[in-house]
Length: 112
Image 1 (cartoon, rainbow, N blue to C red):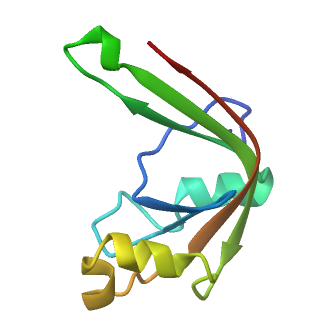
Image 2 (image 1 turned 60 degrees about the vertical axis):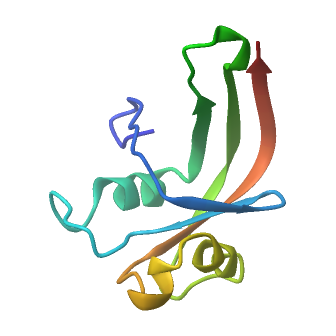
């Protein structure tokens, strides 16, 4: 949620470890710094992450929503190890950061 109370959707490169989701502000170009997503988390750490699978075959459709509390870290949290394993590029180019960890307190979803 943005500081103005409106939803703020941002695609993320993430990893999941149990009920933790982790992502980093990486080195790819961004429209500005500090980033709005970081400002929003600072103002209101309650977040939602939506994962979905799209397909021409509607029998394969699904989505999962994770609601939780985000925290911002200057150094990678322990769960970031999974992000490095999932995306080898993160080993070669360490994100310049900050890191965000979300403690999920509710999972909801749907599948066809």
